[in-house]
Length: 284
Image (tube, rainbow, N blue to C red; front, side, top):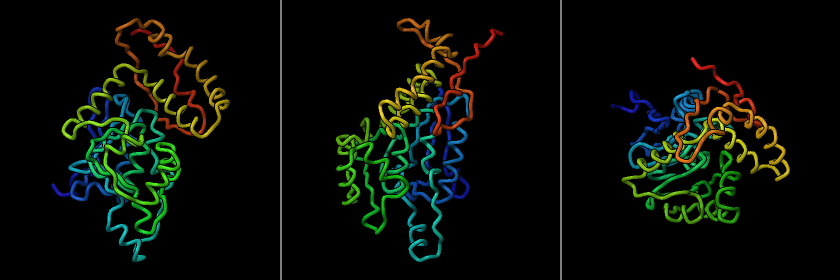
């Protein structure tokens, strides 16, 4: 099938896990406006679906995302296309109230690296290739990269990667903390999906969403503020449906039976207290 007739972002859902696949393999899944629009629409969909508890993002073919499409860069350079900055929309994975894991299966550079950094975790292979790329083509650290990258690898390592714009492999990415786990190329997706399924089967969807907000928020505030944020969330969770009907009674080896996260709410600036349902369902 041609690129025009095949979905730009594929979606498969099984066992509580949504697999989003960037689907421009002939261009190493390079980003243009159409691909990004489809990706953001898929994020909206998986955020709202009750049968999705964890999200995995990967790329079709031999790449994850090679960055901005060259045709877009050429048009911008020639002045044929106006600059339309997507703003916070590009960081949409951070607002999904569910774990989002990147399975980086190949080249991951520029905007593709930013996309991977918006995910909560990054799994990859020793031979995958990473890079920032911007300085070598006369650009700056785009779309929040100057905020995201230092928080993952530290300021000096981030500056090294940004200044040199060099390519580096998955082994180095794991060494500096950019990648959380390495797997052989042939088993990367299988291992990532297995990890995602284990979370989906064992953890409260409500807890996952709130904890994601807490960790992201804590990176921007003080310990005192993190304590203040945790207080109302803790009080609510102690009276919450998941704890009072399931969590409080779990014993070793039990398989929990948490209900889905029934909301289309995205994570924002305020503590997501409303994610924590306190109504106990009446047996039917």
